[in-house]
Length: 124
Image (cartoon, rainbow, N blue to C red; front, top):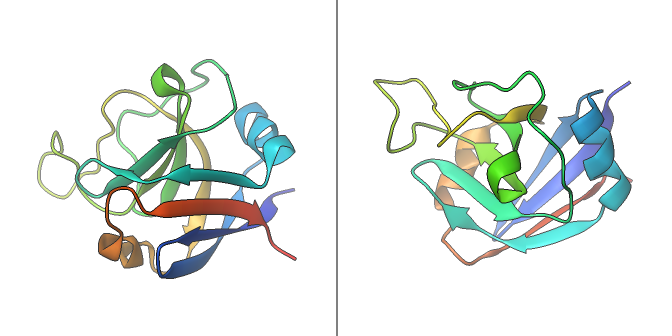
């Protein structure tokens, strides 16, 4: 069963859900998690206190996907193309574990600036 979460980044607050993967469970156990947004194209990423290995990693993701990047122990929010994307595809720097998805309009994250605070918490 998926876990409902809330992501707050700068002025954006959105609902999301974590899936039923091992990595998502590890993230859920650490909630709430706080970090500072790093931007890479239309991707927000930041280090989180979770360590896991690549598990069924994806090299191309969908709009609104939430990922875990093992190389940087980072949580990723994908809301559009990255610098290495071709056309409209969304391509992480390297493979990520998909841990969930944004519910609603993920493109709202386009307003977030690098360094803004990001908080992930369980939905009440």
